[in-house]
Length: 158
Image (cartoon, rainbow, N blue to C red; front, side):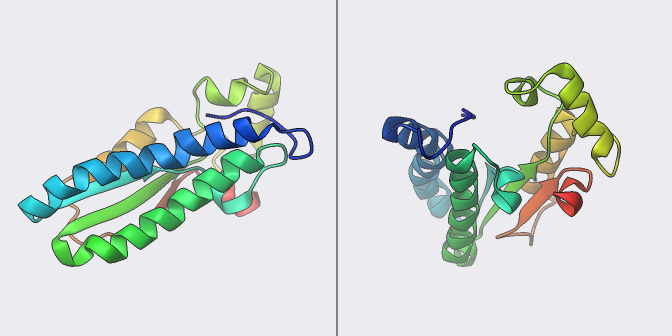
């Protein structure tokens, strides 16, 4: 959920919709799977945040706020359920080579953003999937409460 709006003109319903999808959706998924994980004494949860959680974004305050709140939810839940054998983390993709950055930018603008990245390209969806896969795997036995940026260094320049 990634609409572009100024706070001055944003409808409350748009704010509510973005937070409902990006934050409440994760809360509800977690709420209903957590009893199963608790009863089995283990589990992995990975929330999908965004680079906007680090840096905000003009005209994306609702999106940025929802993704930053998701990080706080991730960390709080990790503290709550770590003693129960459940690991909770979040992944924050950078600008990804998907349709999402093209919603509010031309192909040329997206290309220019990619060139400014420290690695000179956009994040590949499979790189995000690999990070999520590891955090969900049984190989991950000790990482919890973390926000993993999969962004090619994007947050280093903003």
